[in-house]
Length: 389
Image (cartoon, one colour):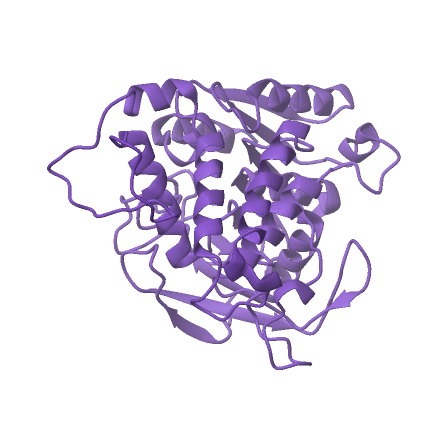
């Protein structure tokens, strides 16, 4: 089967080391879970490998909160700083591009080529900003289904993702069980805990409290940089663990040989000596500001909070009974945001209602971020899962 890709676009974003080719697909409208139609909708995507004649060898990779479609880079395939799941994708790797047609799209609500709050509303000629509708994980999945059908995919061999990407993978398995063979849910659960929602809300409030937010109506390049940077700083703390923070930073001071010039989001002088962990957080905040839209952060983080796989079904068990895919749930020993015990519990609930679910746990000190770091453990788990019929 020959797939005709639409509207090739050369894209360069500051989180990438090299230019990459991505494509976009636009469709007229999308019914939303919270009601109403929204459109037109554009999804930016990248693909690797070749779709077979039967249209059933596709793998959909779903990205995390501030991710993009650039999960793999063919020019620098071994560098995870270039593309976020680079070590897992390519010939002979778990997502084997010599066998599979691998797809990754920027989610609805994003700011890396897909329709989001920064996109132009065709009715007003201005960015949607806070007139963008409240979107859900289910809406993102419905949009992805339109894309994979457009690409000629008749059945997905697998859907895999971590964090909010894991929520999307789970939603695929429940909403479209007939379209998915296997599912990998990494560092994600059926719904966030109250504590996790609380952290997300503090992050959003730091953005909206920034005077430059202007009720969401800021000009490109003139947004709430301080608020977004602080939101990222807080988020990065939830992605780590005490164990890895102590291992990496302790109470160390910054290396005096480094001259990266990173300043705090407030730009006020340090109160005495700066700790290395503070430098790290300042750097992470400044880095996100250069590549991500603040309003997208509000909408996507809210979609993560709102997610409940049982919504619209009589019970969680009723939702999980819809699962017909072989499912791998991956927890992380030190995950603070999506605790491993909760991921394990979800796998047990799927098995309790007759589903084919496995659970493995990454033995990692890296917290929630381990699904972006523990390449050897994830490779072993995914290869074993791939071998199973």
